[in-house]
Image (tube, rainbow over all chains, first blue to last red; front, side, top):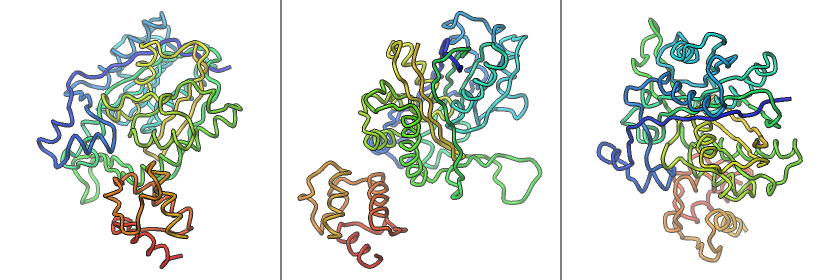
Amino acid sequence: MSIDILGTGSYLPEKIMTNADFEKFLDTSDEWITTRTGIKQRHIADGMTNCEMCVIAANRALAEAGLTINDIGTIIVASVTNEMDVPSIASQVQRAMGATNCGAFDISAACTGFMYALKAAVGFVLQDQKPVLVIGTEVLSRFMDWTDRSTCILFADGTGAAVVGPGDSLKYIEVYAHPDTGHSLEIPGINNGLAEGVSKFSYVSMDGKEIYKFATRQVPKDVKAAMDALGLKPEEIDWIIPHQANVRILQEASKRLKIPMEKFYVNIQDVGNTSAASVPIVMDEMNKKGLLKAGDTVVVLAFGGGLTSGCAVLTWK
Amino acid sequence: MVYEKICEIIAEKMDIDAGDILMDSSFESLKIDSLDMVEIVMDIEEEFDISIEEAENLKTVADLVNFIDENK
């Protein structure tokens, strides 16, 4: 008793920044960015809001599911870049889409956000026996320090959505929290009326080395736990839908898990790191390309700020 | 023995021949970039049960061997 994925959708904003664009104002190079991260270009919202992107992605997912927004019982949006503190992006989406019959809330779990939202969705689906709209969305470009070459080349904008309903495709889902004792990944936020020395602007700050170490160690652990729980052998895994943070992390995981890199879907070269949107964008791309066949064993994995991580296993329908 | 173990770790990580790794080989000459270095340092820390704080100061295989010999 879990969920089926009834439809997927995604949206990437039109404006593109290539590595060459960064060379114009930053001490970096296409060669450095490509070899260290795998990224060649990324999409930038350029004024478009999370809500606007969510509506497009949601409509695409609903179309595939053969449903309307009023069939949806709950809208759950995973994001850390809501333009407003209130209403939640999910509430903004409800308003924009004219949904009358549903609940709406956001989840903040950084790059693992969509997986946390998916696990939450299971609860709502089983309680209400109604489909749930699960969205991951970010406009990280609003939180970039464009003088910090260790971060502004990585993060990007985009949205991915899935409509889920009662079913049994989801065989396993675990999401974890690991204390960020080193303050390795933060967006400090702008708070009104407080202590001196607080920056007026809020930027992503990241200790790349520490996050890299965390991810390369945690991802294999999470996937092994899933394989052990289900009695799965590496060769029985057909596809891996991974959070797109850095292709080097996935290459390390591939080696440690002895799962060939060909099974890891990679689109980071085109989309960069879109945090909570990363996994659902990959899922939609693979789905629309017809890569996911009925009966395929699909592993979903994510990791990121919090620190958080997660792993799910689906038998695709 | 420390030297052999380090060669083994680097050879495995970089997919090169251990025989190509000399005492005075610089990491740069072995095409080891900063992320490879993070991985290699982590493997060495686990192997020798030590902690390497300032890995940026280690430039050659000899530097690494000396550091481990001094801190074992």
